[in-house]
Length: 116
Image 1 (tube, rainbow, N blue to C red):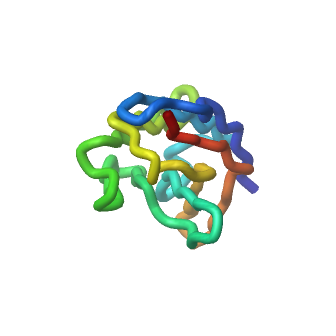
Image 2: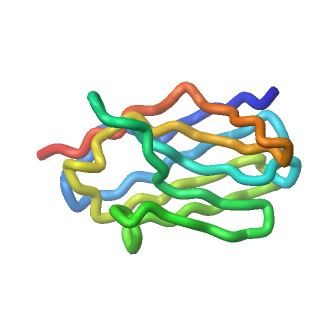
């Protein structure tokens, strides 16, 4: 089992920035990948950013150039730096982990609201 503590969400103006943090109950290197997904009301959950144990990253087209995912293995933490935020970025953001066997784990979610 993998559990998460997510933080950093909140209310921000358009064009502003937030940094989300996800502390996992196991080492980052014990997992195949960690990432962030988001889900807006009435919408499907979608990938925001993903980081593999090998250091590879991928991002949703909608956030490329505005979002950076990074990890700190010593702290079992993954970060999501979000800049130039737009109202359409408003969603519940979920920390995610994938094991090498294919198991998927989710955090409880943290609300990000981008509004003037």
